[in-house]
Image 1 (tube, rainbow, N blue to C red):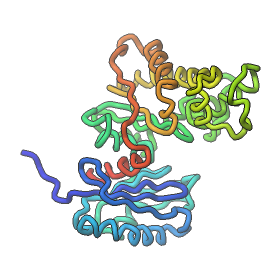
Image 2 (image 1 turned 30 degrees about the horizontal axis):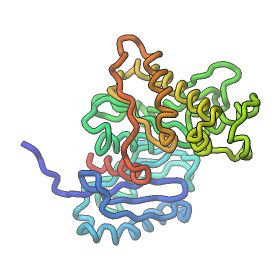
Image 3 (image 1 turned 180 degrees about the horizontal axis):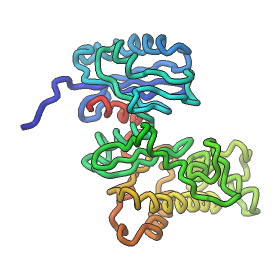
Length: 322
C-alpha cells in the first residue's frame, strides 16, 4: 500500500558565499515560489536565520503556510550531514562550526537536513533528474572546482565523518609538474578539469607553443573556460585541444573511480558541461579505453538535465523529503 505524503512541499536552500536562494518545491521538482537574501549581509548567523524566515514568509503564504511544509534541505560548502553543521567553510562569512539544522528547526518548526553542495546536486539528480530510479551513480560537478556526490545502494556516501566524496582531490599527476591545488597538495583532478583548470590549460599551451589562436587576442590572466568554448565553436584548434585534453583526463579518472563502486552512470553537472561534445566525446573515448575490462560498456556517461540556476535549490530540497 502506498503511503501519501500529507505535506506536499519542502524548502530547499542553496547557501552560497554571496547569495542564499530559497525555493518551495513540490514532489515533481517544480519550484512553486523562490526568494533570496545576501549571505554576506549577516555576520551573526542568528540574524541570518531571522532574515531567512522573514524572506520566506511571502513564499510560504503562497502555498498555505508552514503547515504545508514537510521539511527543509540545505546545500552549503563544508556542510556535515551527520552533525547538521557547517564546519570551517573558507568561503562563508561565519567562522568555525555553525549549527545550521538546529537553528533553522527552532525558527521554522520543521525537520532540517544539511549536506555539502555536490551531495545536494546528487540528491537532486536522483530525486528529479536523469538519475531518477538509479541506485548507484556518481555525480561530478564541474565548476570553480570539481566536486562529487557518490550514491551507492540508493544512499549518498558520507563516510565516517560526513565529508566523504572528494573525488576532485584524487591525485592524477604525481610528478613534480603536478599543478598546485588550493587543498595544499599537487596534481589534483580539480586543477585540470574544473573551469579554472581549463583556463590554466589554455594559459599553459599559449605560453609553450606558437600555434595561432583566437585566444591570443585576450589577456592571458583573464581567459575563462567560456572563452575557450567560444573559440572552439569557431573551430579554433588550440581551444579544441584544450577540451580534448580535459576530457581525456576526466574520462581516465572516471574509469578509475568505476573500480570501487561500479556505478550505473556518471552524471556531469556545472558550467563546464556547456562545452557539450567538445568535452564529452574525448571523455567517453578515454573512459572506454581505460575502464577495467569487466566493466566495459556498462556505465552511462550523462549530462545533467536540471536547469543550472534551479539545480542547487532542487538538490537541497530533495533532502527535505527524507
